[in-house]
Length: 153
Image (cartoon, rainbow, N blue to C red; front, side, top):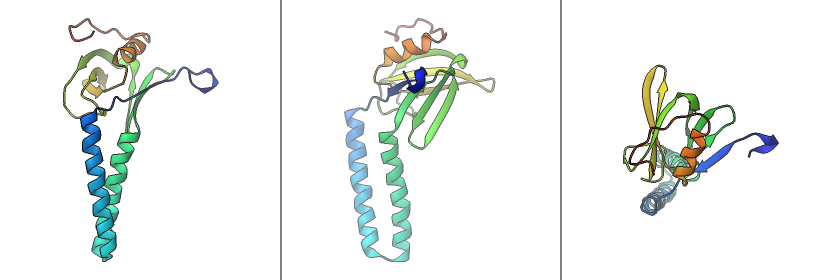
């Protein structure tokens, strides 16, 4: 329940251990390169260091801020660091559990495929809420029919 009595539900992304390890190694490498470049102090090194810092900031932002919010106005808001999507819940046609490794705003391979219509075209997004079944139940409670499939358990 959100402030002021608004029904806002936030589902944090599940975060797989293997991905935490990859991000930790990436962060350490980016930080190390940043320090070396700044020590060098030449204009080129400083410019590369600034670019490196922006990448590091984006990676950390994605790790810290990947979540899915169901708002009381009938929208699903998806945040993954600097990226975000707003999906009208009424446009969702189906949801299925999946382990599809295709890129998406998800920090786990335990995912939910959300199929929806955008500008008259079918689209989909892969999400990884910590509580996949709870997420699906909450979207269904807002009037979305989810067709029964073997992988929805």
